[in-house]
Image (cartoon, rainbow, N blue to C red):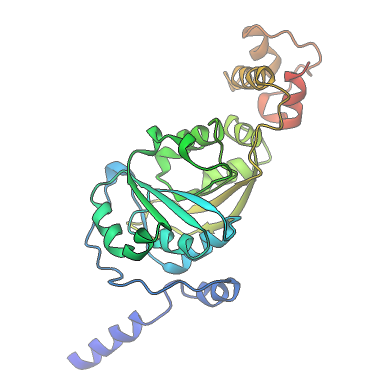
Length: 291
């Protein structure tokens, strides 16, 4: 009886990591990930204080890399490489990956995992906090691809989109609700409009909570923001007025938009009386900034 139970567990462990999705995912893949030595033996546990949730499956990392608009000439900034699953998928598609990791425990693990890529310069590993990282040192047109902590989403998106040296695209694994609010919601929000001011957001796909270790309490999603630029604004002054109006309009959610703007010192006479901030599109807000 003991031998039979061991056999049952062995068969179970050989099942595809993503169950029914694994076959479809392999069909979509355009590249093959190299085998990673010592898989699952990192021995490093996630830090709750850093909001770490590590990817469990190579297939998930591969799919995220495929969602990013990368080419063989792309330079990628990866925020929080963790155990290196997404790093390996990015190395298979991009010219170079610059991985910024704030957790010092991960540095020796990553150096041990990617010795050749580090030696050849395809991977650059930096121990730093992305919030103080000098983005101006990165080449023009770089992209950001990352599995980021939920608590850092708003701050990081704002930092990257408003930086003097903007990335050309962001591909971020974020909380599902946040991705929906930015890319799918019928009503606008301060966050969604701030993103659309600089780029075009797309909800790529959902990642179930079970794809992480430890598993978060909610599902995640891959959010892609492409064609990032300041080209939607005619000048810095127009950009500043746009965001001043935006923050004033969403200042008191229960109030009507005209009242919020009037209280903030803006005199706009062509707004419908009962309209609220979330009812206006990005184009409507831009038109107000130009009036």
